[in-house]
Structure formats: structure tokens, C-alpha cells
Image 1 (tube, rainbow, N blue to C red):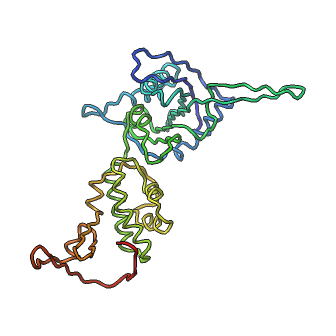
Image 2 (tube, rainbow, N blue to C red):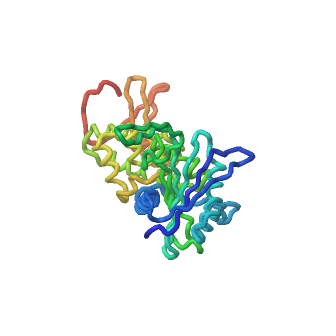
Image 3 (cartoon, helix red, strand yellow):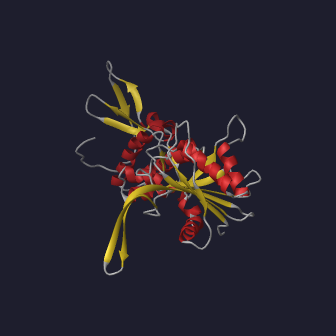
Length: 335
């Protein structure tokens, strides 16, 4: 679906400012290199934007100011409707985020597609060759798109006049840490949240990890997975993917594939969700009991009392018994 309308606006940092600066804008017309760049971005938007988002509802009903602005532009993509969207972005832009060049692009009226993107400003040196082997070098403060791969973007599709445009997809390619959700872009500006609920996705990840531990025959890989089950809890509240967690926890390719193979569908391994420790612990929490004689008993928390039968002994001592086939028998430097 080609772009039919596109506008660009210069957005200043304006968060907490009582007086907002006027926003300059321009219509981007076909036939120039900027329009061509937007067209390429537009074509691959559904592939690039891999974070499923949903406009928040307010006051118990499906009302959302940002969505209203997006629908207004999608239905009538003119300068003033675009400027209203840009004004919303400016009101939440901090000085840390800095000056930005904001784009809006809309497709046809049938399967309508709306894309919003922001590129940060930077500094650089421009060198231009002159005649007779002369070179002109100039320092420029406002340089945008030094890399067309560093930007924030969101895309919505569907007939904007009905109940569509509640769901969309977003990406932030300026993040240094892939586990951090850009609250400024998705939360503050788009007034949206992750479409996949944290508990549901956390439960899916925990079950996949649990099944990987149970079925993995390689003892070294099993040890990796058990250790990751303990460390993963530290990501409570962070926006993560199963793939990102595997990388940050330093899992080997074998351990990573063991988890991926236990996901209901392969693409869910790359789906972003907010990690919920409570939900994770309900489905995958290992309990360890250390005895005074140096023994350490460890098993899945939900099955610990089934695996180890406990009976009182002399004084404060307790006797644990268990029965099972020997899977591994190795010497280790620590427990």
C-alpha cells in the first residue's frame, strides 16, 4: 500500500513547559528523497514494528485522546491535524530526548495504514567538494537521520472510522537496552500499553522454561536452565522478550533453543511483554533446603513436598527421603 499523504514537523522538548514553542511543519510531496525514504520505512513498518500495543481506555470506556488525534489525521491527513499530533508529542518530550523530526504518513481510504515516526537531532560535520580541488567543511548542529536505522515508530491499520485503530505495533530503535520499554514514546505520547498482558506472557515463558528443564537430557544445559530460572526473577517489571532474556542471562545456543522449542509458537519467543515475578513464581520457582550436614536439596517449588518426603527426627532435625533414577552423578566445585 503506497503513501498518499505525508507531513513532517520539528518537535522541541516541551515537557512541563507552561508555554509551548510553535511547531513548524511541511507537507512531504512525492518525487523527493525524503518521500522515498518514508516510502521504504512505510513498506516495512509491520516488520520493523514488532511490539504489539493497545491504546489505553479511560474512565471505564474506550476513550483515548491520542487515538482521537490519530483517527482525525488518518481520515483527513492535512497540516493542522498533523500539527495537533506533533503538539502532543512535544508536550511529553524531555530535554534528554531533545529536538526531534516527526513524520506522519497515511495510506489509502480502504485498508488505511497510518505511520508515525520520530528521528532525533544530532551534530555533525558536512564536507562539500568545490571546484579546483577545494573542499568546504561546515559544522551543523541540527542533523537528522545520520542513521536511518535509529528512530522511533508506530503503525496502525484498519478503517479509522469504526472500532479499529485500537491496536497497533511500535518500535524504538534508539534504545540502548532492549529490555527497557520506552515509556516516553509508547506510554506518554501514544498513551498505550503492551497488548500482551504481562501475566499471560510470563506464564507462557515460565511453562516453556519448566518443560525445557524437564526434558533436556544434557546435564550442563539443564544446569544453565535451572540457574536462569533463579536469575530471571530479577527482571520483574521490565519489558522483555524470551529471546532477550536468554541473551542477557548468557544462555548457550543449546539452552536458548531448548526454551524456544517449548514455546507454543516460534514467533512468541520474540514477543515483548512485561515480566511478572509473581506469575513466574507460581509456575516455575525452585526451592532449596540446606541441611546442617552439608546436604542441599533442590526441586521445583510446586513439587518439592512430593519429591522429598519429610519426617521428624531427633530434636530439631528432620529426615528427607526421595526415590528416583540417577540422571547425573558428577563432582562439582560448589553446590
